[in-house]
Image (cartoon, rainbow, N blue to C red; front, side, top):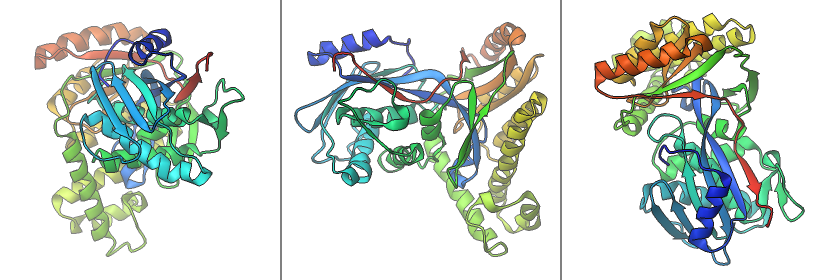
Length: 416
């Protein structure tokens, strides 16, 4: 869904009522995310450190008496209708494929096991997670739709329950299992070979905490941010990420190629996660130049994430910021997923007193930077970024000062 003004729950219910002739039974909200450090490591079974931000994808919905799904995307003014009896990959509209994929996999992987069948659903969708900005609007849509489809069946995941009543059946579904389901929907129905980070943080986000996630074991830890006088500021280049999906898949292929070659000398490795910097330096000359650059970045970034978490726990925010800056250098020079506009934004930020660290975030080739900024420097940061970036690129950026919030939740309407 595209960037828009936040919509109130009352307004969302009104929009649903206008289109379907009755109030919704539930509403779902799932947040976007920004990754503080650990980019392109998730699909290499490495470490990531994202936070959930106060930008959300919202769905208001109700079950239907048939097995059809009727959707209306308010921000795009587009409708999508499909039957649960025969879910097909039509890509029309493109955003509908995310919901088709989630519906298909929920039925096959979750509901069949508990002797349930997916119900039809009517729903309206809106949100203010910017699209094509690297803030995971797609993962928010997948997670929100998963909770909505379960809601249409009168089901709720126990750990997301807020105000369930006796008519709602709580099911035990591990968050990482649902995150993996949503990831698979994006891989298979949207054609993007993403890792599991985005769906995980949209489900598991916790206010004022970052998620330290091991993308191999799927173990995670909520780490307090302790950013009392520091703000997370996101800057959107407003450059559409035309190359992001295709180049993303190329980077993944290069990493897999590197593992295959390195296994000749390191037979026990199964991903770049297993390669230490010491071992990589021993054998990097055996890799083709491009593969070598890609793999070096991933090996170094995994080490940076672990060091960054340790620094944050020790309240050493300057070290954390230095690691963010080093992460951007690696993304720019070795992984080559940055672009001129991202580099300009990062360079401006790093030149401002009171900025602790700045880096691109997301898949790259446009999208956003993430910046840690002392609160007393935010006004100067905003003024300089707006002025200097616009002068240098002839593009006006968007700047978001973000709160770190909780993960996805479903709320049941009082009348249901």
